[in-house]
Length: 511
Image (tube, rainbow, N blue to C red; front, side, top):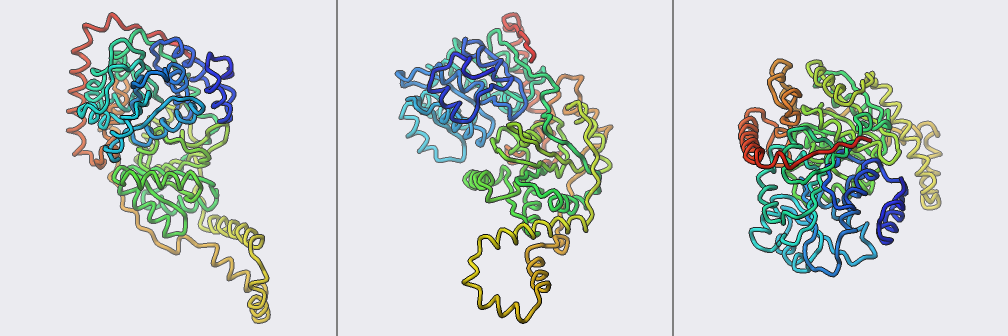
């Protein structure tokens, strides 16, 4: 379906064309017409399928530029996603007088207050900072006509429920509500539906939730072997732009430091880094100044990074849904991508659970040898030499070059040049601290994160959300947080269930 078939104003169509898009993705084709009609929508599709435009275009279409009030509120779980959403809305609204802005924690609140006085019609923000502005009375929501919960499962899943409810109390009951997410387990959907009226559930089929353009492999190896195996793989595959996922903040720091020690251009992001630093690293990565981005799962959600060719899962995720988000960073916009997951013997059961979720078997891959990796380094060095020859002005070096040519033969000089350019990574020893093993199969059967029959298939996500809340993946410290959140969310759900259950009806559409 082409965007010209939607009932969109010309400025928005022009912005879509300027972005290089003609055909709508499945989630856009099914949800944009419904949202334009003013219906409440639950949109479920894999990360990277254009969900921002799916709700962004209808929101922009419904915006009244003559009314200097906040008409649309978009709530995002992370700062990065909120920023990217606002940037996308800005691109789509060029040529109009629509004002949009973003608010998030870690930034100067005074500057945000000043911008809010400029009367934006669309505000994008994270729950905590939005509540802060509401309590300061610097943000009024009594004229909001559309509420959007982006990555709704992440926000409603035992973490932001109370914040979301507090924000929604400030919004008129007569409104349109849109929920968009990559996954939507039944228990999370029940919570979300409390805020909606007769929502239409648009769900992309499971076979489309795993990108067909992503070749998915796994390498079975010991924990202490993973780093050397990964660097060999990088040398052999020579990826253009790579994301490496680690389970903890410490892991990310050690991996990025180790990669740089071995001569790769790498940087890491996680929840403990200052916001300014995180955004600078992301800008450098997008611009190609950094070849390898090392990240916790905080970077797996919603980051709009094009051109990623390889995703390396240094640690297999404990929550299988996180795997879907991770590999969604590659294989975008019709381009092929590769995903390689490193698995230890006791983690093979986690691999099987992921394969069941994505309905696809990963291909086993044999680890490259040291010789194969060194051969890859030499090949890259030869390419660098060719580039240097083209860029170098020989006249400036002619005299010295002549002297070296007389003293040494060409093969000796070429050998020295290759040695300078082609590093033997394993000459530099890198020690990566072993992480605590994932729970065994017997323990895991009692955990909500893998108890699909209980309906709480994302329960384990509360542990993984530790990155967002600057907590570690220490099992003992997070169990109490999980139980507390789980209890409070159940209470919130049950208190509204009897009074609202009859008024909600979910009509399903499948692509």
